[in-house]
Image (cartoon, rainbow, N blue to C red; front, top):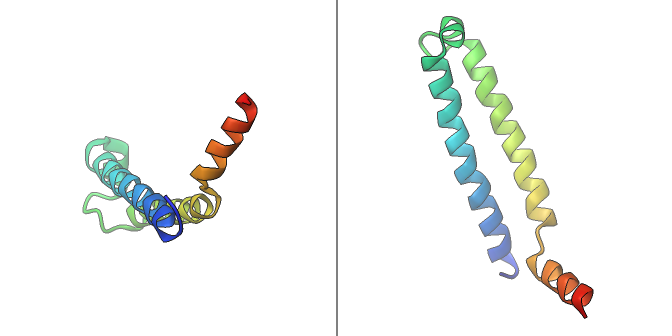
Length: 83
């Protein structure tokens, strides 16, 4: 993977994981009684804040990974270590 494809791969992988975590948080608010009491309709502030924290975290993580992911460099370093 080179150029834009590397970045696209990382961002799509992070987005896919984000959507899974989005559903996880939603299910937690639906099925865990203490969380359900905080946001019974899923449009209250605690639910929105939880989803916002997850979104901001995954956006930051995606940016960091997109800048840092260089598979060719890892392969070159591994080959150099075994030479």
